[in-house]
Image 1 (cartoon, rainbow, N blue to C red):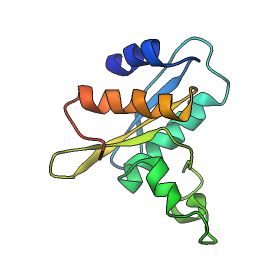
Image 2: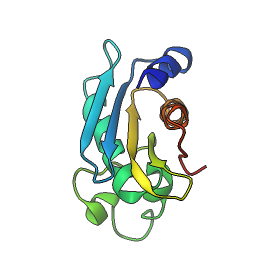
Image 3: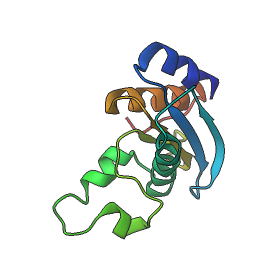
Length: 127
C-alpha cells in the first residue's frame, strides 16, 4: 500500500482511493488520500473485486463485453466495475492472488498506481 500511496503522490493530479482484494474479490486493505471524490472509495473496491475475480485488468476484461449485448455487471455481478484502474496480482506462474483497484485520477494514473503496488510486492499485473 505504501508504494501505491507514494506513486499517487508523484503521479496523481487528484486524490485517489486504493483497494486491495484477495483472490475471491474480498476487500483486505483500503486507503485513501485526503479528499478524493465521494464515489472513489466504492469504485476502487469494485475495481479490485473485478480484477481479482476476472484475473485480468478491468480494462481488458470489460473490453470483452463491449458490443456483445451483455454488460460486465451481467457477467460477474453488481460488485463489478468496467472502469479502468483495476489490476490483478499474479504470480510468475499466472496464479491470481487478488486485485488492486484505484480510483480518482485519470485512467492512466489509476492504472500506473495499481501497477506500482503489484510490482512493489514482486508480482506481475499481466503486462
